[in-house]
Image (cartoon, rainbow, N blue to C red; front, side, top):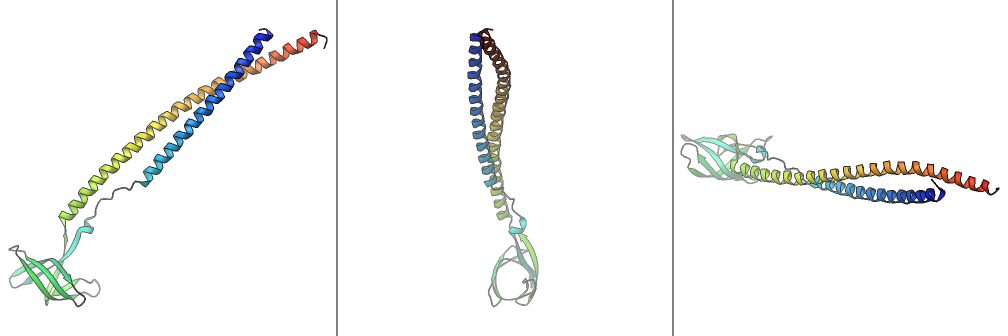
Length: 206
């Protein structure tokens, strides 16, 4: 290869190497943008509150059962004031009829639970408010659906970003391979040019 052709090839490869370096910078910038987007998605994911199913304990109330006459009653609603006066209603378990409760109560000093109403011994019964619990569970189910839907969107977007990053990574590897080959050829051409210059210098009696 002649000196002019060698120089032309050298300049062409130098320009191509610069172009490859520029492309590599552009790809790295794109990967940085993708990384920032991925970080934002992760931060968004951390702000999503995970729904917690309701506990039956939160919807369990203590009612009191007692025997008056020949009937067994159970409180359905009641309130006790600071002087231990009670007002409320009780249900006849046999007839399902409600009756008013008024009077005084006695309480266990340790547990605070009522031990008697108007002198009648009572038995505490834990009753679950099924309607309220079911309503809370329905709300939980809906929130769980929204949570899974939002997480699905984030996961899908994250997967797309990962695929885009892999594509850019492959492009960058190809550019690195190409740049390595160009660098090798440039070193060879640089040596050839050096030899040409040395021969020209010697030819003119340098």
